[in-house]
Length: 235
Image 1: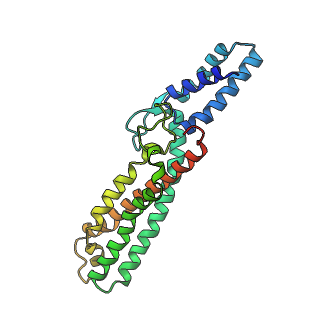
Image 2: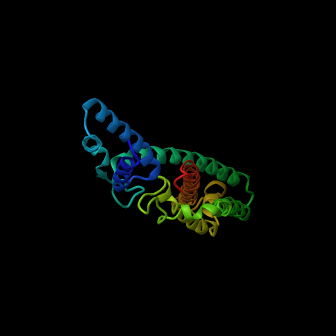
Image 3: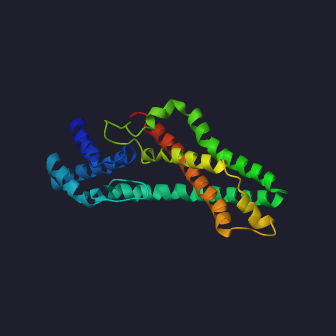
């Protein structure tokens, strides 16, 4: 297979809106299929490529994944990113649970509401500062994170690239949480009159959810960075 034919396959896959990391995997499979069809069915490249495209047709049908994408994506992309994102979500949830347990311990060891407020703000401040530190230590790859930075102007470099904005959302939310006192959580466990149960649950659960988002954004960032290294020849 010559370079012109390889470029035809790659351009076709770019047209299907595949991120480059997925595109390269699919490209290898498609190229192999085209060669096999040419060999065993004695067809020209154009005929074999047409037949291969029909075999992949169902994978390139557009579908929705509203949890992360505002526009439709190919079925094959949804299958792959769902598995990758779920893996990151599980890790994020696990680490956030550890932080939640630490928060409960801080309530237990606090001898006053003011002491717990200091603990509460310090703990959440860590999650506010973490994304900034990640950006600061990885400033050299900032252009590779922008949504308008694409392979040949049309394809994201990785399935993680479009999620980078999650770090901004998480940081903004954490800034609001750090400004709070966390008193309702303290009152729930330590006061004779626990106060408003709904406010207490919100005080406990909202930081947990926000921390999950921050951790997801950070893990997603490092997965994107790792992918960029693998794709260094194309960057």
